[in-house]
Image 1 (cartoon, one colour):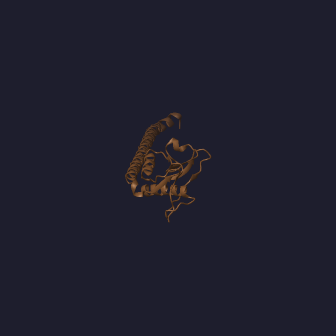
Image 2 (cartoon, helix red, strand yellow):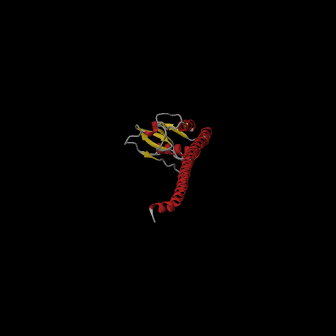
Image 3 (cartoon, helix red, strand yellow):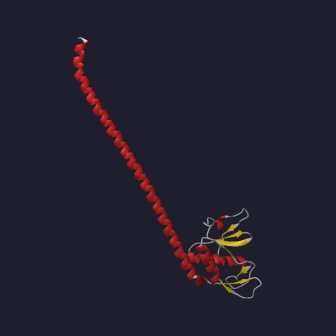
Length: 192
């Protein structure tokens, strides 16, 4: 066979292969484009899912904040339900705790804590004066707030004074600053 004869025989096969190659090439391009379209849709879905998760988190925080505010408002209005008497050293007047508890709750509503009155003390549950009268006062304050809020506050030493707040991860910068000498102590109420 001569080259001319081979070319005449191979020519139709070559044209067929060219058509077949073009069809396969177009199919591959279409497949690649489809894959890119699916990848773009997946990226869009992931972005939408991420935005949805952020929205749900934001709604949960708002709900939690609103619920916390409702609880604090109720506690402020009902502080008289857990009223007890206390004294300030050097004073002869017996004080009711209602106003003190309300002031503490208002500060907690603002995301802050507050200092307890210095040299405040109360009698034990049997009405006796004991060496632990200051601890008894703190225990009663903690117990009253826990009874009203359902959460136990913490009393810490801050700047040489007793400071009451909800926990050590307060959101207010005033409560976040603690030096190494801060001594956190949760005061346990006495049940007698």
